[in-house]
Image 1: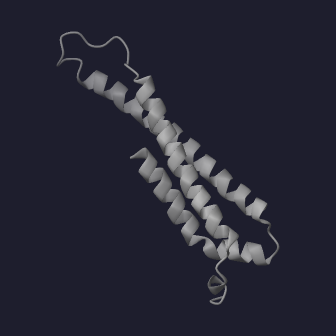
Image 2: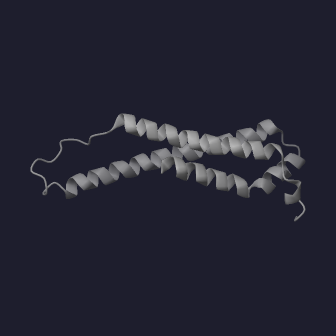
Length: 119
Protein backbone atom coordinates (compact mmCIF):
# COMPACT_ATOMS: atom_id res chain seq x y z
CA UNK A 1 0.00 0.00 0.00
CA UNK A 2 2.85 2.37 0.81
CA UNK A 3 4.47 1.88 -2.59
CA UNK A 4 1.21 2.21 -4.49
CA UNK A 5 0.00 5.25 -2.60
CA UNK A 6 3.31 7.09 -2.78
CA UNK A 7 3.83 6.42 -6.46
CA UNK A 8 0.25 7.29 -7.34
CA UNK A 9 0.22 10.56 -5.40
CA UNK A 10 3.44 11.73 -7.04
CA UNK A 11 2.48 10.57 -10.54
CA UNK A 12 -0.91 12.30 -10.41
CA UNK A 13 0.63 15.47 -8.99
CA UNK A 14 3.22 15.60 -11.75
CA UNK A 15 0.66 14.85 -14.45
CA UNK A 16 -1.42 17.81 -13.34
CA UNK A 17 1.58 20.12 -13.51
CA UNK A 18 2.48 19.52 -17.14
CA UNK A 19 1.48 23.10 -17.92
CA UNK A 20 3.81 24.37 -15.20
CA UNK A 21 6.70 22.40 -16.68
CA UNK A 22 5.89 23.69 -20.16
CA UNK A 23 5.83 27.30 -18.95
CA UNK A 24 9.07 26.82 -17.02
CA UNK A 25 10.72 25.37 -20.13
CA UNK A 26 9.53 28.25 -22.30
CA UNK A 27 10.84 30.71 -19.71
CA UNK A 28 14.27 29.09 -19.88
CA UNK A 29 14.37 26.38 -17.25
CA UNK A 30 16.88 23.70 -18.08
CA UNK A 31 16.16 20.00 -17.88
CA UNK A 32 18.52 19.75 -14.92
CA UNK A 33 16.48 22.31 -13.00
CA UNK A 34 13.20 20.52 -13.74
CA UNK A 35 14.79 17.21 -12.73
CA UNK A 36 15.97 18.73 -9.45
CA UNK A 37 12.51 20.11 -8.72
CA UNK A 38 10.81 16.76 -9.37
CA UNK A 39 13.36 14.69 -7.44
CA UNK A 40 13.22 17.04 -4.46
CA UNK A 41 9.44 16.73 -4.35
CA UNK A 42 9.71 12.94 -4.65
CA UNK A 43 12.20 12.64 -1.81
CA UNK A 44 10.20 14.96 0.43
CA UNK A 45 7.01 13.01 -0.31
CA UNK A 46 8.72 9.69 0.46
CA UNK A 47 10.34 10.97 3.67
CA UNK A 48 7.14 12.58 4.95
CA UNK A 49 5.05 9.52 4.08
CA UNK A 50 7.42 7.05 5.69
CA UNK A 51 7.85 9.18 8.82
CA UNK A 52 4.10 9.76 9.14
CA UNK A 53 3.39 6.07 8.63
CA UNK A 54 5.96 5.11 11.26
CA UNK A 55 4.47 7.50 13.83
CA UNK A 56 0.90 6.35 13.15
CA UNK A 57 1.94 2.69 13.26
CA UNK A 58 3.75 3.16 16.57
CA UNK A 59 0.79 5.01 18.10
CA UNK A 60 -1.68 2.34 16.97
CA UNK A 61 0.57 -0.43 18.32
CA UNK A 62 0.80 1.28 21.71
CA UNK A 63 -2.94 1.74 21.78
CA UNK A 64 -3.59 -1.91 20.91
CA UNK A 65 -1.29 -3.07 23.70
CA UNK A 66 -3.18 -0.93 26.22
CA UNK A 67 -6.59 -2.02 24.96
CA UNK A 68 -5.75 -5.75 24.81
CA UNK A 69 -3.85 -5.92 28.12
CA UNK A 70 -6.86 -7.32 29.97
CA UNK A 71 -7.57 -9.88 27.24
CA UNK A 72 -4.24 -11.68 27.31
CA UNK A 73 -2.72 -13.26 30.42
CA UNK A 74 0.71 -11.69 30.05
CA UNK A 75 0.89 -8.40 28.20
CA UNK A 76 3.98 -7.88 26.02
CA UNK A 77 6.86 -6.08 27.69
CA UNK A 78 7.72 -4.13 24.55
CA UNK A 79 6.64 -3.73 20.95
CA UNK A 80 7.96 -6.31 18.50
CA UNK A 81 9.36 -4.40 15.52
CA UNK A 82 9.74 -6.47 12.31
CA UNK A 83 12.83 -4.68 11.01
CA UNK A 84 13.27 -6.65 7.78
CA UNK A 85 9.63 -6.22 6.80
CA UNK A 86 9.68 -2.48 7.53
CA UNK A 87 12.93 -2.03 5.60
CA UNK A 88 11.52 -3.86 2.56
CA UNK A 89 8.31 -1.83 2.74
CA UNK A 90 10.28 1.42 2.91
CA UNK A 91 12.46 0.41 -0.03
CA UNK A 92 9.41 -0.56 -2.09
CA UNK A 93 7.78 2.80 -1.36
CA UNK A 94 10.99 4.67 -2.21
CA UNK A 95 11.39 2.75 -5.49
CA UNK A 96 7.77 3.46 -6.48
CA UNK A 97 8.12 7.17 -5.74
CA UNK A 98 11.42 7.39 -7.64
CA UNK A 99 9.88 5.50 -10.60
CA UNK A 100 7.02 8.00 -10.68
CA UNK A 101 9.52 10.86 -10.44
CA UNK A 102 11.60 9.50 -13.31
CA UNK A 103 8.44 9.16 -15.40
CA UNK A 104 7.58 12.77 -14.54
CA UNK A 105 11.07 13.90 -15.50
CA UNK A 106 10.79 12.05 -18.80
CA UNK A 107 7.53 13.83 -19.62
CA UNK A 108 8.92 17.18 -18.41
CA UNK A 109 11.79 16.95 -20.91
CA UNK A 110 9.27 17.11 -23.71
CA UNK A 111 6.87 19.83 -22.58
CA UNK A 112 3.40 19.63 -24.02
CA UNK A 113 3.07 22.72 -26.18
CA UNK A 114 -0.64 22.10 -26.45
CA UNK A 115 -0.81 22.79 -22.70
CA UNK A 116 0.20 26.40 -23.45
CA UNK A 117 -2.54 27.03 -26.02
CA UNK A 118 -5.24 27.41 -23.38
CA UNK A 119 -3.57 30.33 -21.62
